[in-house]
Length: 111
Image 1 (cartoon, helix red, strand yellow):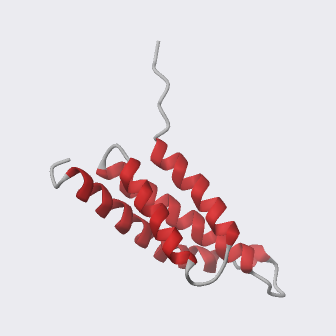
Image 2 (image 1 turned 90 degrees about the horizontal axis):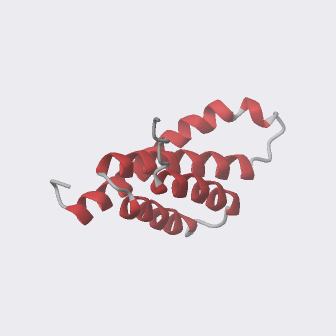
């Protein structure tokens, strides 16, 4: 009987934290909380690969949710999603960098 794939905890955390923290919005200091959440993704990941993937997921989700929450334009939101996705690439890079660096620091270069 095939084994069910276990959902990595770091990815589940990244998805939930991204939605919750993105929906909270807030002033510029919220970036410190986002960085802390990316740090947690790397700390709880089982491997560097999982840490980087969790950071990517967190960065994309938190960016898109934050931008969609704060959008107050005249055009329909769906027309702005491609632009939000481009901005989310920056969030993904930041999340992956912080999460991956945390995993490397926690486990060493050979972990």
